[in-house]
Image: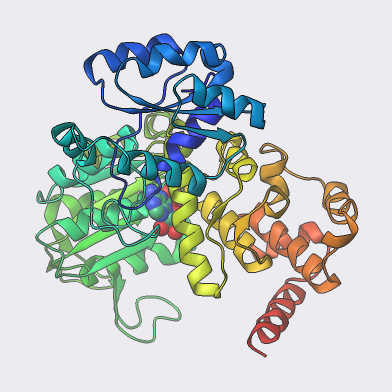
Length: 463
Ligand SMILES: Nc1ncnc2c1ncn2[C@@H]1O[C@H](COP(=O)(O)OP(=O)(O)OP(=O)(O)O)[C@@H](O)[C@H]1O
């Protein structure tokens, strides 16, 4: 219980990120809300912020409900701790505290619950919802997805229900929200899971080559077609064809895609015969399809053929409780990959992750954590290790800010030149969504310099 929303979200998310949690956490902003909940669930452990409840004298009301109270306070002092314990608290946590400290106190409190209450204790140890087998922080919650927010729960539910059908699926969501992961999950949960999953990004392939990429071509169909080529639609026979960024497909090709969907046959470019294929289509776009139709860029007839089973993926900022579980899972994954000792986040760093708006969604978070792990060492991620874009609250850093970041550090934090150079380059690559050419242009260096330096850093690590 804490009046501070950031602290509430941080603690809830930190607890949700823990594998094998034996209780279901609930957050409250006021003592009144907590008392209301305690009325029908008296046997609980309440972690109460002293400033929120109105001081130690107010703790009594909470513990009278037969619950154990752990007090916390930003004005942590021996005096405050003693006063809280006298008022009935079983423990005291000075703020800020990390997830590990909180969990340790909670587990100790559960262990000390009176044996005279076996039924309640047993109930408290039963998780509120079935959880997947815990395999440390890098566990998955659903088919490669991490995150247990209600919004993602709805998505998992939709995927499970629509996966067995052959009808087309239309996935929308901002960039980096997991649209491709969603397509893979649909395939993985369908009866076609043993068949191929073929993904094609319509924005990454030049317009002239797109038709041949989807439908294939025969030798001599056009200049450069020296061999017969099987297209993605045929390769996906018996499986799933994922057309990413379908909104980028040009109108002529949209007509051909419509014909393919209506007839279930593929005609290679330059071929006279059509081949029957059994393909389930999943497509995705980060654009608003209705606006695209209105603007004349998306064929309405094709849209209604594809928009049979729609799935909308929520932006990360709309499901803040997933931020820390995702960050913890990525931290565990990349720490293992890079042989680093990182185990968690300092409370201030966790709060900063919670405050960031994540315009690049899960991909941005994933890249940020990877960068932290590659560039730093330690047991906990600190604020100083986080990329400037996150520390600046989502604003894009100017080149001057990059310089300031590196020169303002305390003497003991000054990193070697190669590390700082690496930080600047990786930060630029990240800011340009992984596009080396654009990052190089922004840094006014050549792309080959970035490739060369990355190779040198790799050799330094493996030396
Ligand atoms: N909920 C999630 N749990 C774990 N990883 C995720 C989640 N959502 C996305 N990712 C990861 O984030 C990255 C981006 O996801 P993905 O490529 O599926 O997004 P997208 O919406 O298709 O992006 P774009 O529109 O830019 O193509 C991938 O590495 C993916 O594995």
